Image 1 (spheres, helix red, strand yellow):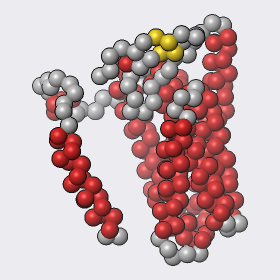
Image 2 (cartoon, rainbow, N blue to C red):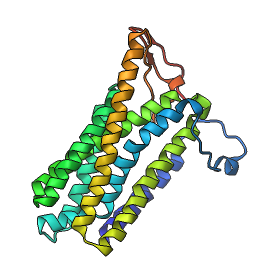
Image 3 (cartoon, one colour):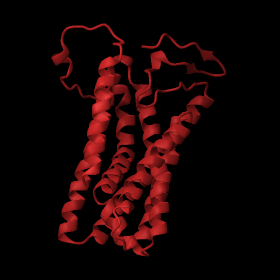
Length: 270
């Protein structure tokens, strides 16, 4: 409980001078305070895809909130161990596998990523429920790892689908809205789960939470499959898919666009 704070302080102490030493990459303009005013919104071309992507985004971020809040208690209960390392293990499995999955599948078609990510999330939640019911530490860890794949890949697909549809001048508002939804999904269900634990028990609250995430994942998988089928029909009629950006990547106008057998040169990067 003390070491982690010293490590964080040490990391910030190293990062602050490093950031200050970085050369500025843009021309400074007046209005820094005005630029901090939040601007949220979903452009009209993205509205349908945004609504269709909500179940998946809510499911995967709600699962992340559960693991970071009640995951350590659940791991300790199932393993029967008081070693706090188990709590860290389940969190690393979910978020670490999610990060690696995003990296490994970064070049996959976004429609496929959304489908397979939702299915992996649903499968991982199902295996985790088996670990809770058994109870089995092995099933809990395996389910968490599989859910981690869904955590990374599903968000990768949803983000790329939406950011490709947004006009360049509207993309910042859309990305801000996506993350507002994600972090509300991350926090509010976790708070509700904490309240539920105080009124029932960890076992029942975990199963109820899993049912919520599993149901949303199933809806996300069905909607993603429908979207992918529609895209394939469109491509069959002569359409072409571009390469949409990934989270924290360059916008569409600054990356290579892969068309029907040809590659257009990328413009100068920012």
